[in-house]
Structures are given as C-alpha cells and as structure tokens.
Length: 399
Image (cartoon, rainbow, N blue to C red):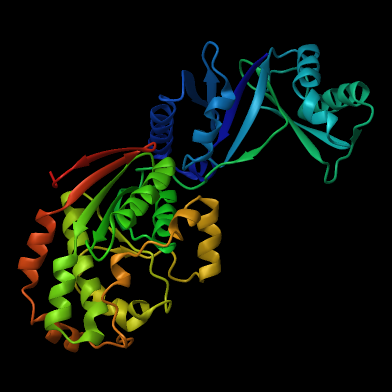
C-alpha cells in the first residue's frame, strides 16, 4: 500500500492569469522545506499538490512541515490504487480499517475528475459505501453529519482513498506578496502580528531592540527563540539585534520623562525602516493594538508614523488581548512570550506617559537630541542572527 498526501490550496485557485506564479512558489517552498526531512516527489495537477514519498520514506514524515506551510488549506493522507472498482473497494477496506473500527457512522463522497471512468460519482460512492458497510457491519451509513467522511477521488492515473482531512495554515505562499520587517519584542503581540502578515504571503525579516545591561542575555535569547518558532512557519528569518541602550539613556537624560516612550518608538521606527530598506523590505510590521498601552493610542501612533516613509502594517490593531493570546497559543509562541524576561520597552518607563501627545511638542523634545548620530551608531552595531528550522548563525555586523 502506498500512501501520499493530497494538498488543497484554497484561494490560490481563484487567481487569474498569474495563478501559476503562486502555485510555482508554493511548490518551490515545499520542496525546500521538505529537503531536510526526506525524499519526496512533488507535483501539481487539477488544483491539487501531490506529495509522494520515494523509497522507504513515509508520507506522514512530511505532515508537520506541510501543516505549517502558508498557502495550504487542507491535507488529505490518502492511499493510491488502480482505477478499478474492485481494487478501490479492497484498498478502502484495508486502508481505513483502523479508523472504521472507532466510529459508528460514515458516508462516502466520490469525485470523478477523470470523466472517462465508467461510473458516475454517486455510483462510486454507493459501491464503496456498500462494500464497507458489509465489511464493517457495526458502522452504519449516514448521509447527514456522519462521524467519518471518506473521500474517493478518481484522477487521470490513479484512484485515491482518504479518511482524514487535516487543516493547513491557509493564506498565501511565502514570498508571493513581498517582504516585510517585523519589530519583534519579547511580548505576545509582535510574534502574532508577524505570523498574520506571513500568512498573507510576506517573507519576514525582524528587528529587535536590545538594551544591555538593562535587559539580559536571557531576554535576547527569548526573542531569538520566538524567531525560531516563527521560522517553522516562515522558513527562514534574519533577526537584526539593535543596541538601543545609548538612545534610551540620551532620551532619559535630555528629554521630558512623559515623552520618553513616544520618542523611543520614533527611534525604533526610523531604525527599523533603515534596516528594512537595506534588506529590500517594503513595509514595517508591528504588534500594536489600539489603546492597549500609552504608546498605542491614536495620537501616539500618529506621532510614530510621522517619521515613517513606508507602510506600517498592524494586523492586531483591532484585536483584544484574549484574541491575540488565542492565536499565540495556536502558533506555539505563547509559552515563550510569557517567560519573565524584560525587554527594552519595560525599562526607563515613565511614571505618567503622554497618552495624547501633540506632534509639535514631541518634535520639540526630540530636537534636544542628535538624532542622526544616535541612529548611525545603533545601526553600525547591529548583530544579525539567522533562524532557519531551529538553527542559528551569528554575525557581528550588518552586511
């Protein structure tokens, strides 16, 4: 018996003349992501991707990778056999033995992509269903809300039988909608924001602001671990670790305390944009949620956006904390995000931050600083960390 994976691609099938570009990118990414796992043959036909193991490889070995691949909506592990009704029935009985033993009701849904096949879809369903009901008399056919839905697909070369329909990540293939720079902190929100934009086809890089010795090495490692988790979905991520202590000290020493958070955020946006342009990114991504903290009021966001010359995506802007946490748990970042290590946003926090700052007052405070010199020094000290499938490489400076 040979088992393969049938992959359904969701909204990709709605694309017009450029549909091939999206499918080609998905296949290319899938081959790259599966290469460390084993040997698989991957091809596309009739809006379905086929992942076929080669040699002794098992199709199940590819499941974890495929389920975290953006652009995949559902995955069906399926047995393949000859396009002959006797062979199809026999294969269904053998392949579905374990799953049929655990349910009381089932139905068969057939799809005949190869219209030359001598039976119609309803006839195929009836014949396979009748065979299974005789083979497993404890399991009764039920057309409405059965415990198990069995899929039989008749395609050009083979027939496929499946008893599972597993969810994929959905969205668009990585890289089909450009590149974005994620401002990645150690909190719950920013990894979720990055994941949500990666789901829409963005290839991610990240920038993290590190305030040593006020923030610890453990805090930095926590952020790199979060990037590693995101890399399981995105494939590869470069984290640009920015030394931020001198900027924060300059703000604390030379500016009014209540403006320090907004000034800090404006520096972050400027530096993130500088790095983004160097890395051919076309947008910034933040985890800001409207009204969650002082720097995330409408007036504060307007003051930080005033220094940006590229789009800023805020995918969690309208979500409450419970909704964000739900996504964080789904993508496995929550437990790491809540580890009790500080980040740069929690140091030098003003006692009474401005929640409705006016831009002219913010710019007045900022004029006390040598903005360009501080930015240049921070950018010159950037450390690059590449995260890919749980591995990490380090470099001491930006290329």
